[in-house]
Image 1 (tube, rainbow, N blue to C red):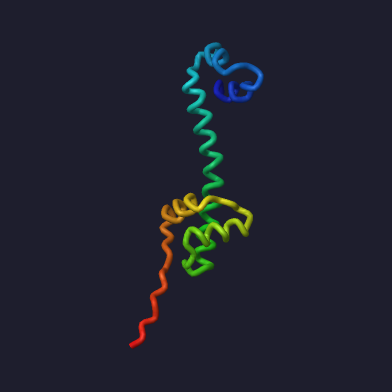
Image 2 (image 1 turned 90 degrees about the horizontal axis):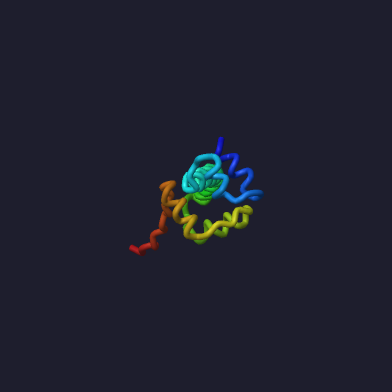
Length: 104
């Protein structure tokens, strides 16, 4: 309750005096603020992960991080290649490599 009050009024008054007045630490307030930011990112993270799984399944798991980046950008979700690579790794998505045709 105190932290949400500080977050709501931090543009009007400085954070340090409000923390002292309410009897909380600045570090505690910033930790609270960081945790709330993570919960907002969590929904975005789940949405991106769902979209990556959908694209991977549609491409028969043939898209690597570079092609996945292009596919995400086309769908209106620009995201970096290394972030996509991390999400693919966390989701357990691996590219199926084509084998070269061997003439026998």
